[in-house]
Image 1 (cartoon, one colour):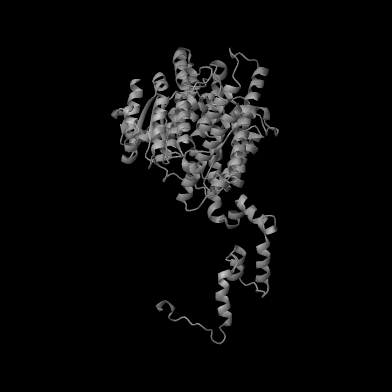
Image 2 (spheres, one colour):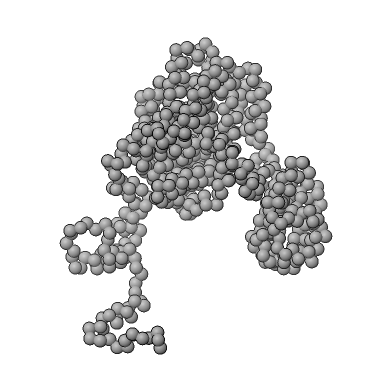
Length: 623
């Protein structure tokens, strides 16, 4: 009865309405936004306005009926999809405008040489790098939620797109093309690169429709760093022919890195001394300037524009010394003024480039969302990951209509924008103004720019990615599994559910697929794979049983049967099975089922790390 003390059973005078209110709370309507504003008022209500007694009730009734197709619903949707409508009314013009202007102009100046340089990685003429530095930046400024994010050309995407372009539109053997043939080849490559951007944009918009903005959460930091560090090596090797003045066919496919190195070493005696000198002088200027900008970031009002200075000096030197005619130094040439005509990419190419558009879309979103989150956490604001999908998807799709290749957020220019004092997406509009002036009026000044300088800009822009390789020893000490996840020939299969009669079929199919065998021992092939491409065969398989908390007789017998069914094939193919992190109960069930009669103690490991280290050792020794 103590819980009823102080509770009155009958209402006193004037308390009938209070009792009705208490009883009504059991059946009250949901507290929507309109109802909240009706009861407590709006935080954004203008002060001093006279309140009408019947207005809140009418507003509440109308607000409850306001769906997505009504006026207020459409306005809320517009606010969500056009972020400038939210932040522009609260823009601090006196405090932020100067910083956005200076940062935007600084980034725009860097976009010009960097865009032309990354166009060479994409195997398209340099002017299309300027287009890709204009349209995507403009679109993201209108749709993106990353206040400090700078978009445009990105070396990793350019390299991936260039590999697809070279594979789909290869240069004829011999390479001696007339002017008209060269223009036709460039037009085909531009169309292919634009089709890749169109496909990746469509895929990202589909991911936005499915609300898949959470996907970057599943990409670990070691995986992203491994991807970008590997791409930095590929960029460095791919630019060696331009640094040395060698006309070599671009290598594609498996082991292209080593094929390019072999071709460069073979053709090294034919390198051009003039272009080698230009490259050495360019790197001698760019690398120290990059280091100064990093070490004295807090003392410099704005970063030193080393790329711009290098472009101007190299253009003047080439013009005054006639390096192009006297020493055959390759130059950029005439940049067409204005903009290309809007053109829908050839839809017939989409099935061919779909396999290239998917990884490009994933890399675009993963890098951009990660970079936006880093600066959002640093400056205490939030981003909408699904809106970022819409922004980058629309940016790639719309810009592809103007012959642009795939684009994303960029590491170097984002850091530059923050260091120069950028505050909001308005800095992107100032950046677009600089690129627009080059496209309309300043293009002829880049006629004598040596392409070797652009190659040096490509290499120096990967500075941060090269330094990531210093973390490899630390990553090996912390987690060998993370370190070994890019190892060819090694498959770590983690089975996260109990192994019993209901899941044994799934276990059999999953293991058979990764081993390259299907049902009844039939070989399975990757669907729609190119006939001339051979995947790296699996030689070491680690069964991670840390998630298998229980195994019954049917599940244990399934493991034994799979081992027996694949025993002869595994011996022929050289596949070795290792078992890791199996608890005592499951291991006892497997033992009683007869698994240990066929698995030696050397194949049982306490942790996946130890199993991975053992597998790596055997792979290195070739066993």
